[in-house]
Structure formats: structure tokens, C-alpha cells
Amino acid sequence: DTMRAFLRDLPKCEHHLHLEGTLEPDLLFPLAKRNGIELPAHFPQTVEALEDRYSRFKDLQDFLDFYYIGTNVLLKEEDFFDLAWAYFQRAHSQGLRHAEVFFDPQSHTTRGVSLETVTSGFRSACARAEEELHVTSKLIMCLLRHTPVEECMATLTDAQRMFEAGELHGLGLDSAEKPFPPELFVECYERARSFHPELRLTAHAGEEGGADYIHNALDLLQVSRVDHGVNAAHDAELMERLARDQTMLTVCPLSNVRLQVVQDVGELPLQKFLDAGVPFSLNSDDPAYFGGYILDNYVAVHQRFGWDAATWARVARQAINGSWCEEKRKNDLL
Ligand code: HPA
Ligand code: ZN
Image (cartoon, rainbow, N blue to C red; front, side, top):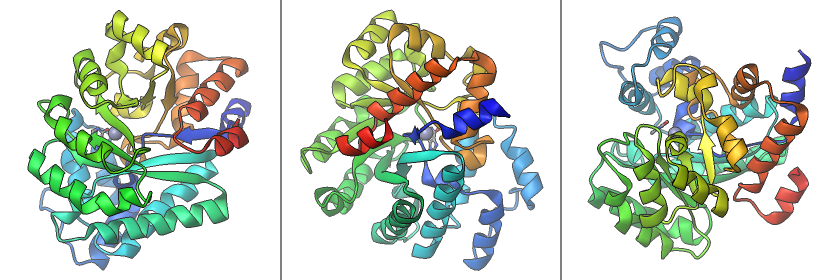
């Protein structure tokens, strides 16, 4: 319809996308076979059964249990390339222009896959996306907050050269929010900041965790944006702070419904953020698991909020302005 076409043609930027979360069931099973990986006995055995299970996640942890089984089928550089390239093509067909994408090195290095293998595959896909699709991108390495801090520090050491070379653009923090609050990772973020003056910092906060997680990510980790962050709406003082500092929240509507953060997209505080001047972007998080890519998230929001064209242009502009790309690229997108 015309609204979908309008939303498709908006210049869209995505800032909350886990590359491992783009593993579609129809790639998961062939990769498991290609790499001789045996899936657990309880794991659904067909694409249909798996998709059905994905539509019934109880909460974040229930999803993560599946997500980490999925990552186990990724072994070789070409697996990482195939994964990311499939994402870029799909998102490009939905009007994606720029993406800042997460990956979880620890979910691979603990299985004996080197960081170099992972990033080489991803970087090749990013280069091809820029060349062939004119989609620009940045890689953000995430630390798994359910793992010991010493392991996270070792992962940072492993990645230091890549941060110094600008091959990795930012640091993030993901996996189970509770009971792993931001304050556990102060040392990790300090270390990362020492690698490069322009290294960008973000963290998942305020999806499961309360507004205090967001305050602590800002104060203690010194992040310049917040992933999810929807629980900021419960804290008036925090809302003022986010608006004053123009700190962007990377909101993930379909993810929030699938993981039962809200029961319906209409419950998200998006109008409240707009009215208060709190910038946000709309993102797909783990599209293979949550039933939609970036445009599907825009459409779902439109179905509930029914914004006019000027408001949608403002939402798209906020996402461009909150991107970590060069000013020149931002101006091209605006
Ligand atoms: N939240 C936390 N950790 C994650 C997510 C998420 O949405 N996706 C992949 N790892
Ligand atoms: Zn996420």
C-alpha cells in the first residue's frame, strides 16, 4: 500500500541489530549440516516448527537460549559473510541506508572460532554492501554481560588492535540484563575508551532493567546512546536528561512484543518520547527471531501511532542525526 511505500522510501538507519540475530531458520539448518553441527535433541527439527517456537518466547532469557544455540552453527569466515550479506540485502530491499551492527565475539571465541574469522567475514559483507547496495555500516562489538568480567577484559585485549585500526567502531553490552547491571562493567568501558579517542560506547539498558540501569549506563559507563531504553519513560528526571543531552534510545518495537516487554506496539512510549524531545530510532534487534526487518518495525509503529508524513520525516531525521557516521554521510542521508 501507499503508506508502506512511503515508509520504505524514507532514508532509514538501523542502530540496534545483532548480526547473529539475523540467522534465519532457512540458513540455520543448512549451515548446521554444512558444518556438521548437531543441534540439541529438544531443538525444533524443521523451519516451520522453529518459526512457530520463535513466536512464543516467554521473555528475554527464553529467546537467548535459542539465540545461542543458533550461533553454534557459525564456524567459518564464509558463514559470517553469508549471514551478514543476507541481512544487508534483505534490509536494503526494505529501504535501509545505514546500519550500525552488533556482534557477540564471545559466543564464537569460546567455541574455538577466532575473532579474526568472525570480523573478516563481517567486514567483507560490509564492504560489499557499501559497494553494491550503497548501504554504509559500522561494526559494534558487544560484551556478553552474563559472562565474568575477566573474560570480557580478555575479549577487549583480543580486539584492541581492531579498535585502534578503526575496524571496530564501538562497544556495546548485551545478553541478560538482570542480574548483570552496568556497574559490573565500569573497568571494561574504561579500558575500551583508552583504545581510541573516537571509540563510541553504548549498552543495552532499560529493556528488562529499570530506569536505574539507564542512569548507571550513562553515569558509570559513559555511553553516548542507550539500546532499548524504553523504561526511561517511567522516570521524568531521566526523560529530561535524555532530551537535554539528545541521547538517542535505540527502540526495537517487534522485539519488545515478542519478548513480552509490552503486549502491543501501541503500549510503547514513542509518542511520549516525541513530545518530550527524547530522540529514538526504530530497529529490528534480531529480525530472524522477532518476525520482521526494519521496514516491518516502521509499519508496525505506523499501524498503532498513525503519524503523519512530517512526523515520520522527523523520526527518520532523528535516526540519521543519532548515527555514528561521518558528517558528510549524514548530510547525504538527510
Ligand atoms: N537483548 C539482549 N541481548 C541480546 C539481544 C537483546 O535484544 N539480542 C541479542 N542479544
Ligand atoms: Zn539487542
